[in-house]
Amino acid sequence: MSQKALGRLINTTPAADGVWIALKGSAAGVTFSCFLTGGVGDVYTLQEAKDSSGTGAQNLAVITEYHTNTGNGSDAWTRRTQAAGAAVTTAAAATQNAAVIEVEGTSLSDGYKYVKLTSTGNGTVNALTRDLLAQRAPANLPATGA
Image 1 (cartoon, rainbow, N blue to C red):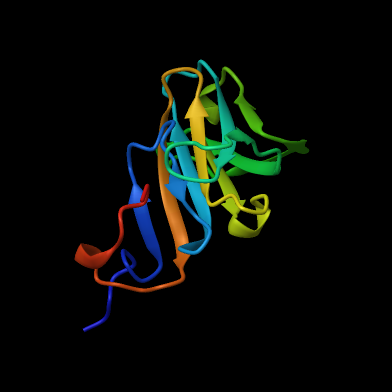
Image 2: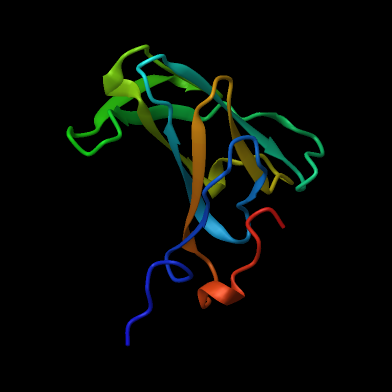
């Protein structure tokens, strides 16, 4: 019997808007999947911290590309680029209801182990930690914020 992706390739925090996610030492990176319906646009800001309580929190200005689409499976992803920054602004257009932002663990500053992505609007954020360094059965995965 093969092992499913949860625990082997990914761990997830579906309600991750503004939640610290452990990255260094647990996974190679995190993929944030964001969604805000209605074509109203949103701003998502990336930060890093030394621990899960937010010690030393600071913006992490490493986002140079992200992808957007409607989020309903009817269109392909559109790659968008920007100068390295800590924020992504999605336009007020249905084709940018959904956004995917990826962060590599190697992007964190020395001594920093946690990241969070926060919506300034009502957007939802799902964090998928990926390429897990230790593979486990889902019931044995550590909490993503611990």
